[in-house]
Length: 378
Image (cartoon, rainbow, N blue to C red; front, side, top):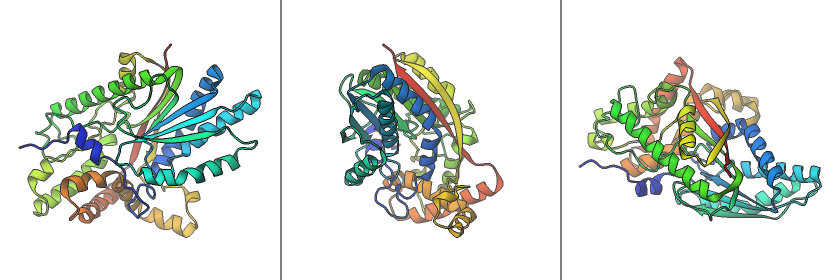
């Protein structure tokens, strides 16, 4: 009988690798940091326009899909610094900050809670003249349902989270030898993934429409694509390389064929037009801006400031496949372990690394990001 990951199962196993080990998200999240940096101007524009319109005495910020690691407080810190700067310019009293950090229950919230005191102290020292009180709360749960009180949020941020679906689409049993959409996928597979994205993102917008105040803002960034073809290489190739590794292990008898045939990635990487279409259909938010950007698969590429020495930088560049594999492992390992068990995990990623390295040596490899700035309609 076909085993398909239900919504509850996906919520239980979909999380980044916790802790601080070699394969942890905390040590392999530079890619996500780069994407957050790319969208900083869009966020600053949204925050400034919202704050100047409303001038709230309490500013409620929600980061959805916050994960756990060096990026967790990045956007929150940025928002508070900008608001404090605006308050100083306007000679306006600082608001109280209510910060909600949301992710699925499997997220490493303990690590976040341990970091709060350090975050507050560091932020307070960086803001000349001090800042308003800041209260942080962890909110475990799926953002595909209501998770905040009605009309309680001023600003919502989410980066590299909304491409994850609430469940694996139904009716994709004939997607043989694939773990995601691919060039060899039948048309019903592409339609099923898109339909699941439409249901999920529409529900997300409906829930946030209840929770965000009138004229409040959201800035959302998806792992997406430029091409309107959902099976294009720019969004599917990274998973096709993993499928190749798994298929090789099936051929060698290391993984059962039925296990391979029932493993599917619960993700959809939308185009800008698909994102806009759902926003327009749902109707609660107006679109301020949509932007598309790219980042190299190897986030360490040409980023010498990240390394302690030139030697370390050059060593990293010499093995981009290792960096990309660790980035993907931090994301995908919990899904793979849940389905295949732990016995062959190292072997899977060894093969995956070889495939990634070969692909990077032959062609341009980039992730495409779709970012959208929204305002809650009155």
